[in-house]
Length: 387
Image (cartoon, rainbow, N blue to C red; front, side, top):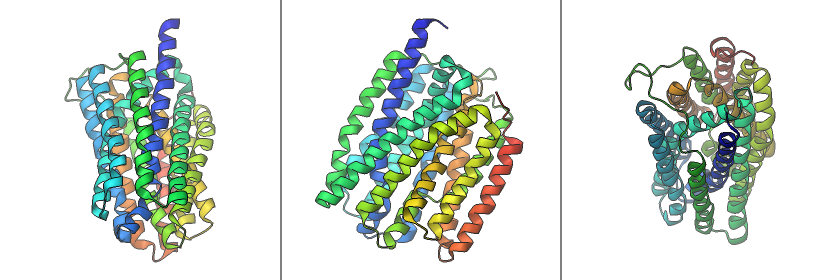
């Protein structure tokens, strides 16, 4: 690979990382108080638990975006889906300032998830192409650095929202301010396209209707889905924290702590993945069950939030890096399978957890049973070997 092409890939990686930083500041800032905001607008606990349905829709969007990108096999379509998804994802957040009823806010949170869904699989396929250009033996490191940028943004977004709530007591002011990082994210995305307009993607050899998916992808997807089923959604977690009497501003700060833990854990997880992939993947479901247990048993809110962030880092770093090893022509399809399983698992698991929280020990037991199955699947079926 030529020096000029490598510089372009590095510049694109930096721009994509900044895009994620600013985008996460926008939508994660809004999501940090999703539970308290719905409670403020008059919603019940089942509505908060149903926020995970928005993530199911988001994961369905990931499936749709991945299929469209995979079948097209054209770089321009990949980038079009990425730009469209980010625009929808980011515009929905400032509109929350106009929501006056809980179902309006719920709808906007769902629309925001749809935008995130549509762009995620093609974005990750582009990022996998960049990672290959920068060194395939460092996939874990590259995806971990990208995740670190994500969570630095999420940390900033949570602080913005917390400051607006503490100083002004205004959800609407907080959501309006988030329009600034939203604009910065779209500008960074334009820079990434400028540096890397032709990612290495191609039409699958079996034709656009028959994706060439590696056999290990099903095991990887199942392991991730079982792990996510054991992982309490932040909408449900933040609602639970709010009902304990914790003010909304403090809930936002707890989410900020979770994002800081995610950012701190991402790099070590990425390095560990490059050395021992299967073991790292197996740790993800166990970490999510631990976080769910702390939240269900109403342990220290700070400890529970930190555990939640570490668990999320496993899915956003190790599992994404593992999917990146697929051949260029099938990466979008593999990410589609992975995200479909994660979305279904997260939604169904959280519906069950919401109903079981009256008996916290039962909720924790379910989480550990699902996590154990996910860890075993990762070890036996994900097809990972040490590089």
